[in-house]
Image (tube, rainbow over all chains, first blue to last red; front, side, top):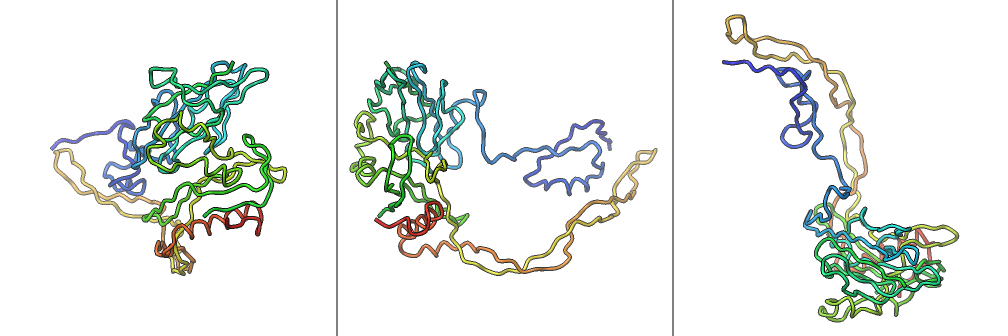
Amino acid sequence: MSVVSFTSSNIRFGNQGTFGGTTQLSNLWMGTTNVSLQTIYTAIIYPRGPANGANLATFRSSKWRVIRLRSNDYAKGNVSFTYPITVSSAGNPVGDNYTFSNLDYAYVTITATATYPYTFQRWETLLPTPAGTSISTSSSVALYFTDWTGYYEVRAVFA
Amino acid sequence: MALQINQEIETINKGIVTNPYLRIESYRIDKVLGYLLVSCAMFRDKNDADSNKFIYHEDYAQPMGRAGQTGPIATLITYNDNSFEYPVIIEFPLGTSEIVTEDILEDQEVTRTITYNDFDENGDIVEKTRTETTIEKVKTGTHEVTKSKIDISVIGSDPYGLAYEKLKTHYEGIFGAGNVTDC
């Protein structure tokens, strides 16, 4: 019978599942010196960023949507979500830090605000391609979950 | 079925609104966690709310066909010189109060003798022991606490009416008792 020696901190156990956590580590015959507890699942809200991809797909039977709003020229006007949250672009695209669940919301409302003397013209799609499909000529419009299947990018056109 | 808030608010997308119209947009009952969840939205008035819904399923297929839909009042509002976001998703627990007896647990040091197998110089298995002291939760007594026992039957036969009743109470906490009326 061979003996296996653990010489570094290279054994990690998840803190959930069948292995019950730190109290059970004391039952290991080799002690706890070279054993660490690996955190595998602690997040309740999942932040997302460019590295995480745009689509969260389906999670907990809920379809999550990501939508990015842009302005064709931020000097001429800004864009914002006004429902179910209020967040404005302030000179940059907006929406990357939020996801919306279709279980909780049937729609989001987006609003374009022109800077005088410029005026709002329309909302149009950028993604999915082909870009340039008009969505609405109303500066404030409700977009429903039926309007897109995943990552959605729309632009307000000011002139 | 809806609610009217008899107070004036300042909005960022619909100007000054004197009597906002509050409508529940969706209902959800979580049977496992015992919650009634509602999502709601405020509109300028009933006409504004009615313009933001559909008669036929086919009607919401094309965004260009919704020119009159401007959405609800933006969630960021000003009321009594305070700016805040009105609540959109609200969870109401479904249950009844119950007094239960629970253990009182305290951290205590517990020393145990651990038996383990080792090998001698000949490679034979020998049994050895060592002691380890750990912090464990130890029961030191009991006490009574009031808990909310999950019981979705409290919904009764009118979940919509119950949802509005609870929503009304919730919004009275924001705009004052008596300032939210059925409409």
